[in-house]
Image (tube, rainbow, N blue to C red; front, side, top):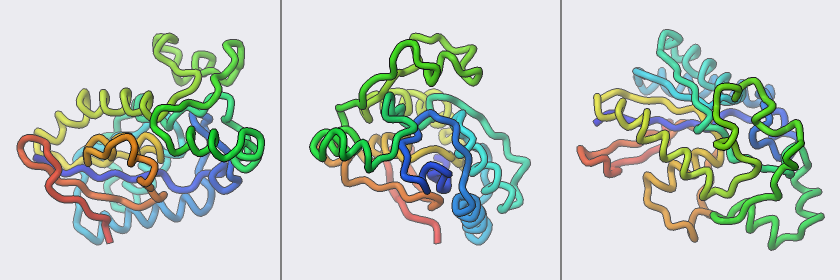
Length: 229
């Protein structure tokens, strides 16, 4: 079985400003570029050769993948992009400061949505131009599949679906796979891989720019996990 390397994109401009980003296509901050380079240096120093890379449709993840592979001298690696690896859609909270949302809705609601598994932020208005159906990135996707808001449970369903659809076949071939994605899409995937109960998912942190390697047995059961150093 192949190896899986997961890396959360480096800090984005809105990460630095403490703004809910979701599907908003925000680029990396200077710190995020440096984190992506460090991830590539870790691949190089650990003599890890990537066979295939996956990323979301969002530029902060795409650029992290590019910088990581470039720094590791592996720009030739085929990279595949899919919206199912996108960050969790934060609905009407997108574009708003996290501290202000916390003040507006209170701690119980805020943390129930942000760290819980089943609760979603308020949905975007159907006419809101932030809707994915108005974005050219998603012009070839059935609008019925595109969210107006997501819980982590919703996010997990699409991410795990894509994991089995596209990533697992590469692992079965024995390939080393790099996935550059987002805090919540990776929380969802790691939660599935490590069989973390929904009630414990709140404690799972995914730091930016830190590659983590996962190894599996022939039945795709996790056998080893460690952070690259």
